[in-house]
Length: 336
Image 1 (cartoon, rainbow, N blue to C red):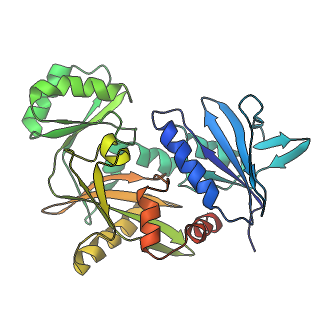
Image 2 (image 1 turned 60 degrees about the horizontal axis):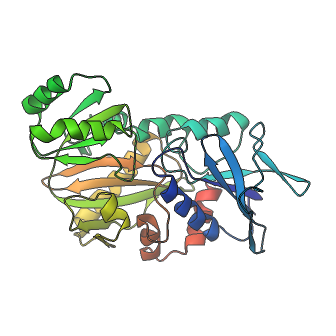
Image 3 (image 1 turned 45 degrees about the vertical axis):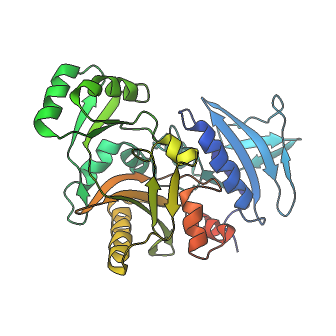
């Protein structure tokens, strides 16, 4: 017996990732079990509107632009044709702010609505790359590349001097709180550093300059099923680009090999490490962890709202595991 009847799938976002989030949200909504009433909510810059609804065991119905019912945020409800619906559960599919940095989670916690992802605090910590690395830097089961934290307004000549003294080129310059590789630049020499930092500032007021590490790019996902943290098959990402940038992710310039061609020992190590990171951070729902496997296993980042389009990494992992996507989403929903 299900704990919920009406599920709101919240997608879009206030960040550069909003279009990807829409595709992820639409795909997720289409795969949620037909036993639920599913409402698709496009949420951008404070305006939350129902764009489509699929009642239990019925066809999906869309609302044309201009007549999309707006969400009442006082109690997380909507009125459609005179019927007031108060949502039982929220499936968060917002990549970027506010659905990945804890703000949306905090709202749902305050009004007492269960949801699919990590709690507000964990979401805030994991969304900020520097904060997340700080939480993991001293554990004995993963390695973090050396880095330098920079805040908007810093003297960039001083920053360049610190990079030269403490890191080795190439380095990666990243917004601390952005995804889908927006604002990331691989910097091969000091002359390229300032423009890369300014590029990252367009996405965030804080920047991480990280020592480049070499090796194979791998990713693994974890989730809760009952009291057990389970992991999905590992994917190796092979790209013809210099790194797994936006173009490689979304324009087909990469191979995503699932299951990754790793030894049984490497597989066990990566999956165990993923589960340990999940527990260490206090995660909930579905989380994907990215790595570089070189002379050691290097931690890259945690994705608490991983991409969920038909071509995304997690659906490939689910298929490789021999699971049906609807069955998998049921596990996420019923264990939230």
